[in-house]
Length: 351
Image (cartoon, rainbow, N blue to C red; front, side, top):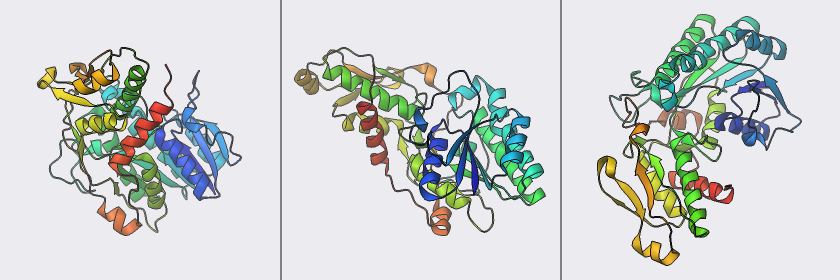
């Protein structure tokens, strides 16, 4: 068995490779773009594995995708490559759409032309639902994106459906609600929080001053899971008798404020909220500050530049069909997820 996995430098691609090496006997081909200085930190566990091979390709280059599919003749093509940062998608909307939508079309064309028996996976997003009409959101919820990123993923979803029905391909586009982990990119709010908490933890420990973590909307509600749980679900989706799209989610919702509170809790730092609106802040409690001789006080402050032009206030998934039909369910709870991320960043903190 041969499997191409794209986006292996990111959390999902790396976790997918780790899962496949542990649970299959397949040869894994991990695709990355050729750049001057790729960061392989997420690939340390498998980069030298004899069943893993690094390959170069680009979702914006159809020739590279054609060549890879034609030469490797993969049984599976799992696409996690994307411009995946929602906030950045307003700054580079065309690049976002080219990678996330047109890039999927290029993958599908390569499979159609050179290996139509290959099973294709496209990573969808709850951002496709955007301005939600009802909760929880299931696979039938209307497509109502509120960002270029969400629109690009919605377009990819339609493309997958067209190719599946037109060419009888095993092609699926599952909706992944928010998922995080220790491999999450530092630009994402959850990792920004966990790494910020680790930075403040070590500053307090070393009796040093620290700058606060600056964030935007603290009351946005998200359905958070661990990426490691999701890659197992993806593999189950890829191995059904017939292709079918699913939602993967925790079926719970939590605010960014909750993520912050739990992050400081697991770091053993006591904070209190005060103020309102853009003036709201979280500071160390007086008792904690005196006991630990804290040199700074503000832990969290609001920075308006981190507000989205069009905010998605609530995302809450309904993954009941995946749980009942695939036998999948997340193993890592929201509290476990936060604790794992904070403790990982504390243990691996570097100045």
